[in-house]
Length: 274
Image 1 (cartoon, rainbow, N blue to C red):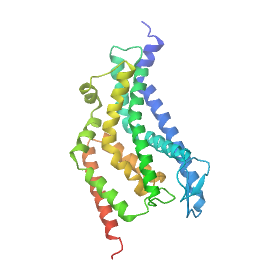
Image 2 (tube, one colour):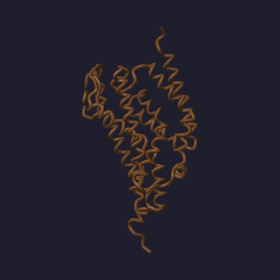
Image 3 (tube, rainbow, N blue to C red):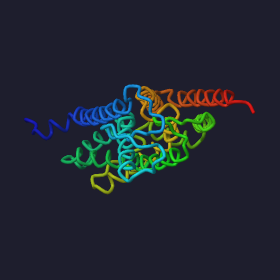
């Protein structure tokens, strides 16, 4: 008996979903690279000014209050950056959701359901992006952020590093990270595949919530190395990927925690003595 085109595609769900994730990640990283190149300004002295991450060379005096359009651009930057950083580590869960859907009752709509699940996951990170935008505004208004969106205070930088390092060893980190290590177990613990939009969104949002709980403090390190430092963004994304997918991910997280505390302690010791 010859398979229908739909059945053939359904059996290739890994390629279809994986390809869609790959395209989304590539677009997100392309946008981040475009913004970073725009903010580089060829080494120009930006003292007294700040760049708006719009990709079109917009500068404003550092003392001028944020406008609504600047808040929107910064929020968009964070949201797209979170997609580029987090979608690769979420891919196994999304692929598992599509596969469970193929073998479940909803034979005709696993891809639509998977799309809503992924949307729920990204919605959690969109909420985080809104919070990160507000925090960036607070830090910038306190004159603690330079034109490269890097914390300009060694004391604040050390505090963030040590806090991040300590969090890597907390039970909450363990609980959240455990939800990412076993995609199938996560689905079974939380009701399995959903074929309705609300159920898919809520399940994706729940998984995204665990993921935010696992990685939010690592995202705070972007302020230490530079929010638009592409190499730093890539290194943090790689660390998150290893934490969530490697068999020894828990120990990688703890090793990263030790490194953060050591770096923070070094910054504290380098502060001028009174």
